Length: 137
Image (cartoon, rainbow, N blue to C red; front, side, top):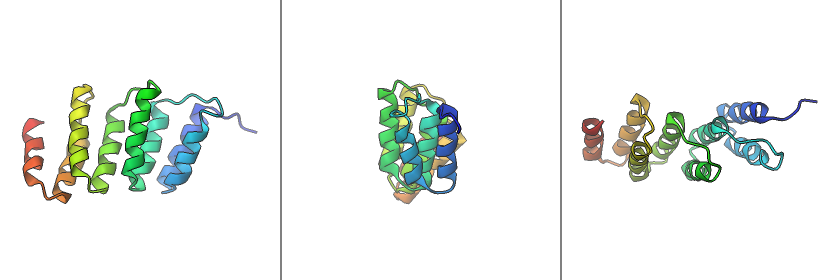
């Protein structure tokens, strides 16, 4: 029998997410604490990635908020996955706000960050916000 630890849970969460099984990914994620397995940024990122693939933007944002409670710092990948989930959910305002939070948190943005934000603005028919993102970058 394999000993469950952060690495094995993270691998399972990531595999579920890649397979499109976001619910199973979140189930595995939520099983970590009761099993006394430490959550790390990879755990959160894998779970948020799974939510993004499952178009579950609300769950992605809940996980992002849970990081603060768990005292795990979000990184570029964390924000990018959450912004992409918002983009897929046509939540352009929340995506735009999250990019602002990312800046305030001094987390480095990248091309993916802005592509997802611009795409979210496009879906919301907010071309002027998309232009603003390009100029403020």
